[in-house]
Image (cartoon, rainbow over all chains, first blue to last red; front, side, top):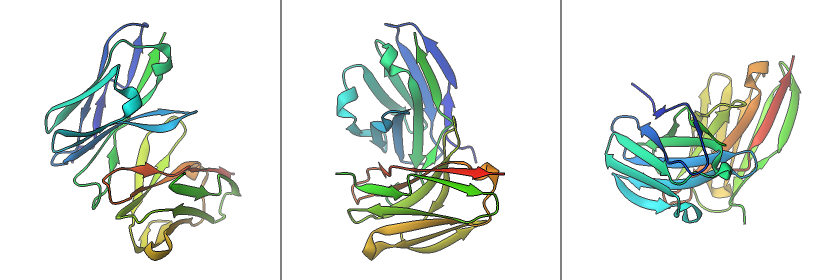
Length: 114
Length: 108
């Protein structure tokens, strides 16, 4: 079975650009999470979907970050406009039902904003 | 305060030694999972163990739910085990709460 797939693996953006990161969860999984990871802040939750419905967004990230899940097999994270402080690794994770099952992470997208 | 505390924060071992990592949490948890992250890498699931004892390869996890603690034992450590070990719980809210992490370095 395919795991969680994230594209692109690396992204370089100029300040002010719009970038879209993509995630394909494991087939059949109902829970999907987006995280941002930096050395200083560690793992920060950006969004959580259950059965395509947005259950939680990471409050502090609302203004420029928008995650969507238009179908059960694909999610996007849009950052608009990008700022240098957004440079980080963005991770997507999925689970059939996190409260009862294993959570699987994708390889991540490393974003550099110049 | 921090819901999930891990100890030690860092650990240095000689290859072949065993490692014992601890995870303590302040709320009841319906799910607990251990992850490994190599430097520059993503999170890899090691074990899901909300209660009891589980083994996989050189890894053994024991979770005592009533005492809100879990341990991860790595036997015969190898240099390739070096990295960060994270535990994460679901405090019955479907949220993922990560621990503070243990950074392991195994020397040849």
